Image (cartoon, rainbow, N blue to C red; front, side, top):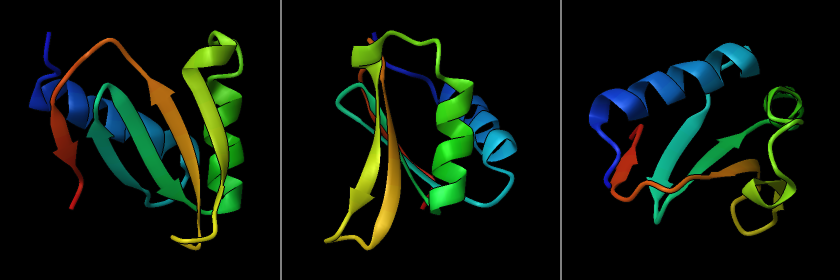
Length: 82
């Protein structure tokens, strides 16, 4: 099942509310990739702290020079905030 544009937009809005700043969000291969500041990464990961361990990941990407938060889902499709 593919994610709809509406579902993507609602999830992006949720990430932005919890990050309390602008974030870049991409959805590919069933994963939301949120590129953001370090503080936003921790704010978002706090919201998902009770999610199963294998569904979330956070860290820093030296190649992108950005912090990231990844949320895995069972949906397919591709969307981006750009």
